[in-house]
Image 1 (tube, one colour):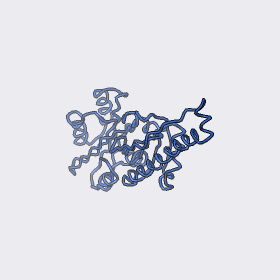
Image 2: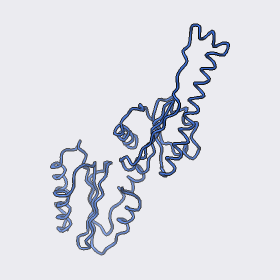
Image 3: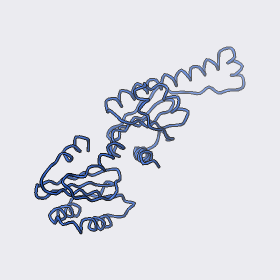
Image 4: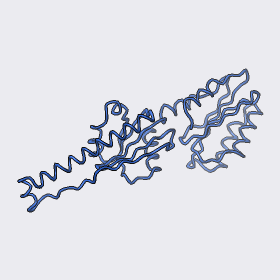
Length: 249
């Protein structure tokens, strides 16, 4: 997993020889592997550092599996330095030759996509996700007491005036409150150990709004947005939604 520690190793690398920094977008929507290789060749064809150009092209021809959405490569052949960072989030095509590795795009990705906590919540339970750079790192689930709604109308309403339906309605609200309070406690334990930087909450407007009241202020301050999503959504759907929100779509 790419982290700030990984970034520092690349950022701190220093040599008297020039370093090639290359970022290639490999999203399937932009074409297949051959299309990406063609763009790559156009990017490196004019650089004067033949050893680095050959090493980069060899990597993409024989080693890269094309499974990510982008990749960053740093090469300094005279120093024996060659670093590859596969990424599950997209970056723009970019190449630079300089005395230091060009890491600004990676720093931007870490600022935008690192250590995101996601909570899908309803009246009974929640699903908790830890996402990092577009990949699912860990997830947990929580299930509280089953919430049964009391029907209104008819004889039950009349009985409720003497304590029946009102007590039932109060019991429902109490169960929801208890569930969401316990969900908030579970979410706090899960997200604080992950040291998340941002939190996104999914569910219906009603459930999300109610749940946020039970989060501690330390987590409320990290909530960057909310979204509509069913508890039955797949992990892939959650990832796609988070990427859309992070990209401002």
